[in-house]
Image (tube, rainbow, N blue to C red; front, side, top):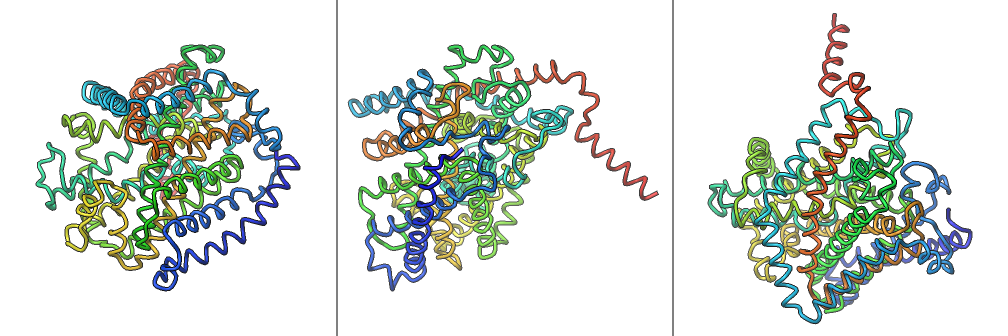
Length: 616
């Protein structure tokens, strides 16, 4: 519950944030849509600061608005599992320190500090060691990632249509804590991050310029365009989201059904028991989860910063300077820390809703002004190939290409599965297993695939027609994907509106993942049964920002990203353990009620019989 002093500070903050947002918004919007009038007055750093001030104050104001129920975060259910203990600023440090688990808190911090110290002292050796580990894991154990991901998809499909899909998490009388649109918005935006904005205009172009060896397509041909959209859809579709489900659903079941703690290590409940989750093996799982989350999200913040700065430079043709990226990271830290500290019921929920609405608006605008004919025709062909070739895409590795693309992607998704899966688990009380599967795999994958078909298809159409050479722009920028989206959008009608929405999406998408990861890591690092405090949220939020800043200043971004992604290997194995444990638990605890639970097919048949009787 928010203390009186904290409530006063929030009211003062809201009264200051709104006018600042309005004033900075006037300048940013004027400069964006009338750059010839305003653009020459402000420097590159000035535009960056104003843009961050506008987006940041707006999102922070939204996060700090009060809720209808002031004590909502202290109620049973998912809000309770994800609650934050709001302390006055005087108690931040003391309340933070006494509640930390010495292992799950201390080990990840020490590992991250050791990594950057080693990189500072011997960057070449660290880079060589990480690259060697990556090549060994991705090329010698590619079968592990491919097999684990294919099994995850098959298990999700079985749960969707089978009798276990009717199990209600939390018991038959449990009610969901959120409306379905809110539930979907938080699951989707937390799990996808800004990667969908970063890679949306770029991945299809890479596959178009260099198709997979086994595809049989000639580079930059019409067939290559179909192949490109097929692989982009494959890498961001049902396989990817199934990785989150097979980690998140076991956590949800054992937490809501059997009283296990909200921890990633809860997937081990069938083997260790609830009381055994304080042992060294469980601690190791949670430590890996924290390292994977901090490393993955922090490097994403750093790389997305490059994309945002590229947009500022593209729009106003101004130099941001070497400190621009650090300024962007600092602004993001402030935004997502406020959102995480405000709790799920306020900042995280509301910003996720804004994110989804902006995502839908941008997609609609792009569909209206983009090359619809090419997108629809090529997209339909790509979807058909995705469906018919799904098994061969999933199980037939293409050597080095698969290691660099498919296996890398699968390891990346598995490395994000701990925090995204745990968040999915916490939100899913009162939902049936079938609803969780549909939301966590089908609905989210559909949104991801539609985005890549739309934005990737637009990029391919403009590239093929010669209206813009995005591949050349990427090469001119040193091969970075960060610049890909801006020349594409600039070549379309309503280009300035699209560019503005695109920059806003970059900020909002990374905030919706970073605030969630900050909250999840705070929970994992806090002692079992104790809610994280404001000080814990601030510490982990700032630490993520420091890691991102270190990537930009010290270097080692690619090495840290690879190191974080390599944790996908252990979590691919743990996903198999989680599926086995959940199946055993379902068989043990739900067998007596299996016959009473209709399958999806059974429900469809029953609905058909009811319609037939009405027609008669």
